Amino acid sequence: MYEVKIKQTRIEVMRFLAQKIDSIIEEFLKKIDANWQPADFLPDSTNENFTKEIKELQAECKDLPYDYLAVVVGDTITEEALPTYESWLLDVEGISKTERQGWSKWIRMWSAEENRHGDLLNKFLYLSGRVNMRQMETSTQYLIADGFDNGAAKDPYKNFVYTSFQELATNVSHRRTATLAKKHGSNQLSQICGVIAADEARHAKAYKSFVSKIFEIDASEMMLAFEDMMRKRIAMPAHFLRQAGESIGKTFVHFSDAAQRLGVYTSLDYTHILESLIQEWNIANISSLTGKAEKARDYLMSLPERFKRISERGLKAPVEYQFSWIR
Ligand SMILES: [Fe+2]
Ligand SMILES: [Fe+2]
Image (cartoon, rainbow, N blue to C red; front, side, top):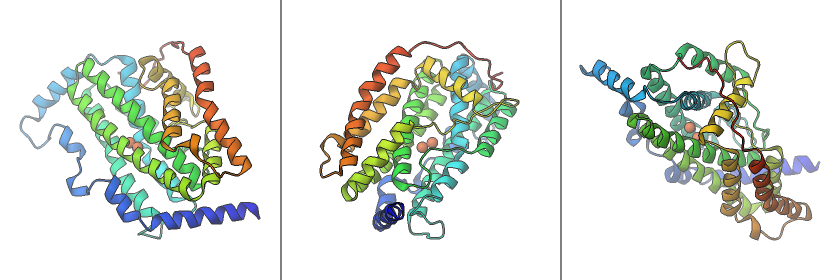
């Protein structure tokens, strides 16, 4: 009975927030006609200079280090598994795929923006001459086929914690790959990672604002949802990543090790993101909570310090790994 009541409240809160969906879209997403498209950042194949431009692109990419390429391939595959994320979110309570004006409108328009990320990275990597495309594509097909489980089930509060976290995490990692691309000679790739990072930052703002609104209306339940997601730890969207012939999730470990070695996304970043969310949602000062939610708040407040102690201990550089994706 209690569960049913919670579910009902969440659906009502979602419905209430959905009344403002058009202004939410207006505020956080770009108009399609004015938005950047992958073609803006790639050589134009109808141009007579096409082959010359590819040569230049490839020359810029020749010094990109091994781990760096592995991370960008992993990022690309993560972006390419967008069908999984869209279908997951369309299945969340309070989001109905038949209601074109409600939350599904947000999910579709967000997915449409996100779709440019994998598309752009994929085409660039194809042109770079550094990647075994067949192996990368096989991993992408596996990742979509294997699906994912973000631990939030169909709960909208938990899913918005997840998406807030993930948009921030992808912002960090694309921003860092942008900086490294420049350092290793490819201004084009740097620009590409940079525009994608900017999209992620904008999306993060949106999801964080949804959670802020829910905190205003249903603070205790929102607190418990945040606590639950952090207790489980936020699973990365590509946590099932694998290469051909491997078992599910095996490559993910090596991909995240490479990201950690490069400093593109580290366990300390995970902690910093958590800290920024605690600040953003003003967790320390949320009052009038139920006893259980107060305990959840205290747990959340203590978590960054705990994570810092663990990540300091765990900062070793694991050995390099042979990825089949890299030529
Ligand atoms: Fe993305
Ligand atoms: Fe994103």
